Image (cartoon, rainbow, N blue to C red; front, side, top):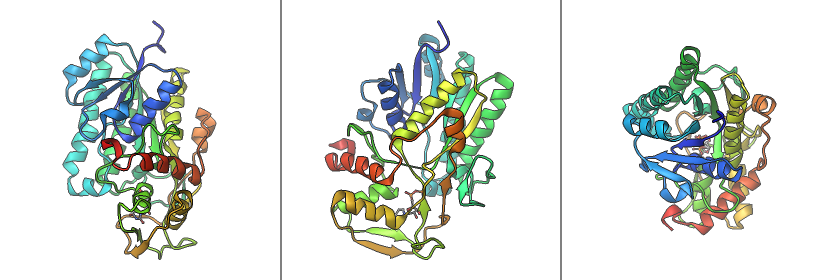
Length: 333
Ligand code: UDP
């Protein structure tokens, strides 16, 4: 069997980003498998891919899977991802995001599975020292979530050197939007992200949207973030795998859309797309929010050949709206 045969194992494939990766992998003709304990994800999000239900800590189950099924690579999304919660309960983050990943890697290495695409984050950079962030920006995370992801990046570097594990770490900026066919989308509990919250306000599920500060040093005073379409994010994972299979050097890439949008621009765009007025209230700043966070994604474009298909905010919001309006209760509908 050639090394490029076998399934892509998506660990955490029932979650928001994992499920969109499964969707994109299938649409590009890849064989897929999903490993998930369904603690936070949704069974319906997995689609027609086979689910192996299990915990990351269950190395016996992982060993059985890796020894019985040909696995071409592992895409790893099973992690906790709330900054605020990570400050209140760091143990949960270091255990689930670091210790459990060590178990997954140990099982992979034991079974000679040596390609790994890792879901990392712009939170590994911490407070930006410049507005547009490339891969050389210092990594000095300011919360346990970002630190847990950076620890895994370090572990991957060492495992590459010592054990020949090949990896690509993808540092996401603000993932948003939904699959174009409307079959899957974002369904977090609790929801904390701006675009789904503004859409909930447009749907009347919440009375208004709170703007966390309008006194930032930005053109309209609200924070600027880099929103990247979830399918564009997914396609970068596949390009990362193909890059490794062609012998590419293990490394990390920043993934964003390269354009910043302010909180007010996001709300205005949702109003335009949904054709519904949205009440807004300016409240105090949220702790830990830098004024501007925008990715320099040129390295991913040049090295992986990555290009965005859904790069503008209007498209991101339109696909998100299509999902939320058809599934007002998310996967419970
Ligand atoms: N934000 C806001 N109101 C909300 C949620 C978020 O004003 O109810 C702002 C937040 O301060 C940040 C931007 O929207 O500037 C994006 O926040 P989100 O939580 O979606 O992503 P983050 O950038 O924190 O990863």
